[in-house]
Image 1 (cartoon, one colour):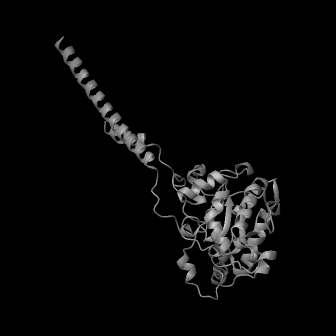
Image 2 (image 1 turned 135 degrees about the vertical axis):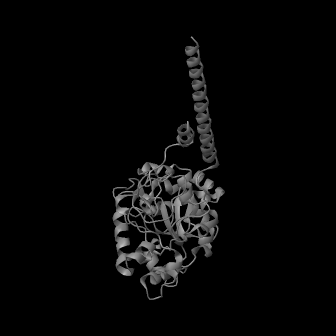
Image 3 (image 1 turned 60 degrees about the horizontal axis):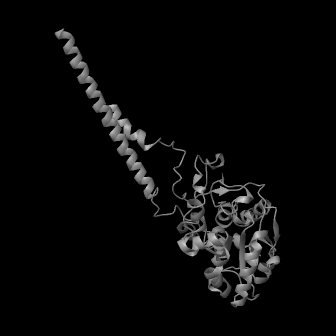
Length: 350
């Protein structure tokens, strides 16, 4: 009877997860890992989540890449063909508003990202490279739907807070209308996005999805996790992450002297050693790539309650059901006991 009362609520509440498996009902805390993302096909471009944890493989390469210039925008690189119509419309609107934009960087293959990340490792050291560059497979650029933008005006240097320039400010306010969303916005970076604020980095998600993200005031990472089905990413971390690198806090990186590789890389990110406009336009070295800017990453997102209200309600109902079942077993056992006693009393009388 006691066993029924104790085990009933536990059974109703569901199976206990082993220590290596997460409930996956909240956005994962920021860390460096190499876990295959849930949606690895280019056909699932709207749902594919890549960040410091989740990645696509070496072979991920869209087959419909076209030059960005087909959208009437200056710059280099390619994007997927279905991005072109909205990119063309956005380019024209920005031009009409007196805030012309250009492309600094677009699609990057896995191999290109290997080169970029290795460059930063050789130049500033591995720790600084981890802070400043997406590791191969973890870059949104590999999806073929991400753009690093700059001002089309040659005299407008890239660096610092691009959102304070005419082109950057226009993009921050209007890009969502054309299906583009800033991946690492200021008010959510690095705590939620796991990367430093990047006002030039935009990902195309489509007009409907961009409108939803804009209306909710959320980030692409949150939207993909909670609304696009990426919360199915449960289970143990990859074997490579037995010694997975935890993301350092900004306070730790800011305390370094200016002579350290971390400080030098951070200077690039903040624009105090921003590359020249000519280098940016030519894209002659990884230093000119906005994605190369150091992203000082913080720890886990805060303020998120584990589970939705419906999840908590269902769990409470499950516990109550377990208690009811336990009581039912207790009552049934008591009745059986009484019946047996009465039967034995009758046998004695006979």
